[in-house]
Structures are given as structure tokens and as C-alpha cells.
Length: 537
Image (cartoon, rainbow, N blue to C red; front, side, top):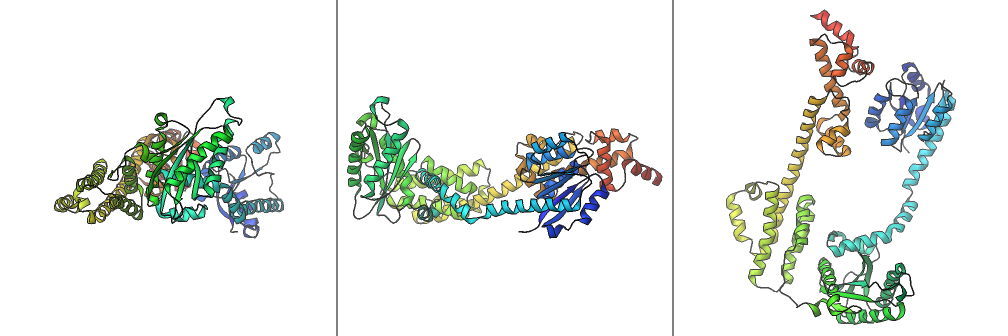
């Protein structure tokens, strides 16, 4: 383990120096990250230094140790807090216990006692980190979560939102044996609700029993994955050389009959179109759900094959809403690899379709239209996306050449992605500029906290703090303090206002704390600063 970081807080400089000097920090497993004179300064340093332990006095100006502990607990619950006090006061101890303070130490601080306490704190921190790193515990936690992860992944797969580039490794990792099939078929099983007295089983156990029955039948017929999806049970069946889609439908008919006979439960099964790649399993799933929708027409308690209720349309080639959503998401948020993967998959659909040339053209124009809408939505310069109007015209003329289509769309989509990323960076800079202007206009407001700023900007404090520091090189609190102090210097030089009036004008409710912050920044108090400036004139 490395050294743990300590922040020491006490309003008496001699006490701080004494503790820092006398303790053998490294031997105890710690390093002194920094010190602070009061709670206000300590809060700022906690954000900057990220200590593991805060060692604080209880009686300090501006903000006492208990208030500091409470504020730290709210934002940084994992930090260990040690409080020392010269007051053997039971009420203080009670409040410290409520705040989950690690230790309550009486002054004067005994170095031997403090060393023993820090040794216990280090041991506790070591155990916590060791527990987090313990591979066996992590493995047990992972294995415990595996069924949930498996169900989530399979649901993403049939809904068409799974990352297909990692589908094969994920299926192997989750022990789902459906890879390398001749084709795949998705089916959806709906358990029909019956009158309470119609079944001998409680309702909550019926879907579990049905799922078990389905697995018993499928186990001897094909490789499969069974999982819960919404209110139904979903099956992905791998069709190999030794089984058929017709045989699967017949098997589901047997399951429907057995469910009624053994479980007193009526189930209806929707069987979708087959697909030759796992990329098409979402369409197979959707067609299975569509087939299930016909149960009100053809009757419940049986298997409904989509081809039996809807005309077979081998010539159907359509750029649907789901395809548009996936392409849009890839261009807006994805990597270059993700963008290319999505576009290649869309292009592959044309290879499988046997349609008239005009239908290919409509499909490709629909994809291009999706890109044009995105360009308009994000106000992207078409000339920039295509280099020139001539290239744009050439592109539009050539989009219906299937052999070049994917390459052209990939190139333009990646350019759009890069332009959107640049625009996000520009937007961030504009937001930070707006924040700076807001500070200049409202620095006199003592309530101008990060939270207040974020309410104005409609941003989350965590994200704002990160981008503000990235853009300015300063934490928000430090930047605000700098603006206030510069204005205070200006008022000291140009007005005869009293110090307390200047403090109020630059956002400090307490004159003493204003003087403290001013002296810390400039090395002298506001009054002395004014005196020196007057003498030099």
C-alpha cells in the first residue's frame, strides 16, 4: 500500500507545526498532504488535495470542526475524520458519534496516543482497500451478478442495442452456446393469465415453471438461450444441420399442450423469421413479437409462426426507425470503429435482399437523408463535410452505386462525428465563458456557490467542476476568490469604504473571514494594504 494522505486543520499555527514536526508520518504509513487554519479553508483543500484522513480541531473561527465534519460527510463519505478538542464535553462527543467520526481525541495531543490511533486508522484503510482489491471477492460478486448480466445482454441483443463487435466473446463469457449456427430463430412465449382457481400454482411461480418446461424440451433438440424479456419469455434457438425451423415450431406446439396438461396454464408462442447472422436476431425477435400479436385473431394456447399470418416478403428492404436511431447514436457518440460497424451492417442488408433496383435506391437515399437531417440539426457545414459543393454533387450522383455506398457513407459519417465533437468542445468553452461573466456580475452574492452557478447554467456540479478546472486551470472556488479579492483591492484603492463594507460588496458576510482570506493572498491585512497604498501616493 502507498502512503495515505492527511489534512491537518487547526487555527493555532504552533499546534499545527508541532504535530507536523513531531510525528513520524512515513513510518506510520501517512504523508502530510497539507494543513488549514479553519474549516472554510479546509473544505477548499479537501476538494483540491483529496486526503484519506482529516485531522481537525473542534473549536475554530468561521466554521468549527463538527460543521466541517458534517460537510465532509455529505460530499466525501469515505474520508476518515479525527477530531481533537480541549473540551471534555459529552455533547461534542455525542455529535461526533452521530457524524461517524473515526476518533475523538482530547487536547493536549499526546503523540504516542495519536500514533496508536493512526496505526488503527491505517489498518482499517488497508483492510478496506484489500477487500476492494480481493480478486476472490470480486470474482464471487461477478459470478453472483452473472445471471443478471446474461439477461441484460440477451435483452440488448434482441432489441438491437448490443455491441455486436463483442457479441461472440460475451456469449462465450456468459456460457450461452448459440454461436456458429446455420441460422437463428427468435421466439416469444406469452403466459396467459387465468382465473386464480384455474391453476394449482400461485401466479408468481407459473412463469418460472413454464420457463423450466421450455428448457427441458429444448435441451434435447437444439442449442438455445432462454431469458425473460418484458412480460414474456424469449428464446433464441440455433438451427444446425440436425434440426429445422419447422421442427422447432412443432416442438413449441408440444410445449403448449404440456403446459396446459401439467401446469394448468395456457401459453402462446410467437415464432419469428429466421436470420443468417446474429446481427439480424433483433429483426427475428420483432417478427416473433408481431406473430404473438395475432393471438387475438388466431387464438391462444398455440404456436403462431409469422410466415403463417403475414405474407412472406423476401423483397422487404427498409431503413426503419430502429436503424435510424442506431446510426444516429453511432455518429453522435460512437468511435470510428462503431460507426463503420453499424454502416457495414446496414449495407449487408442489401446483400441479403432480393428486390427491384428502385428499392435499393430508396433504402440508400433513406440512409443519406438520415445524415442530411443530422447535418441540419447540428448546423454542420455541408461544404466542410464534403470538401466542396462539387464533391457533394458527385456524392449524391453516386449514392445509388451499391458497391461504393458503404465506403462513401463511412467517410462522411466519421467527418460528421469529428465535427460534432469539435462543436461539443466549443460549447464547453462557451459555457465556461458564460460562467466567468456570471461570476463578474454576481461576485457580491455570498451564496454564489458551485450549486448556485450550476442551477443558472443547468449543469450538474460534478461535470461543471471538471470542465471549469480543465478550461481555467483553477478550481471554481479559487477563481471566485481571485475575482472577489481583485475587486476588493480596487475598492481599497479607489474608495474610503470601511473594511466591513468592502467585505459585503465582494461577497463576504464576515469581515474577519474576508480579512483572513485577503491576508492569506496578499500577505497583509486590508487595512495595512490601504495604508501602504496611501503612503505611496
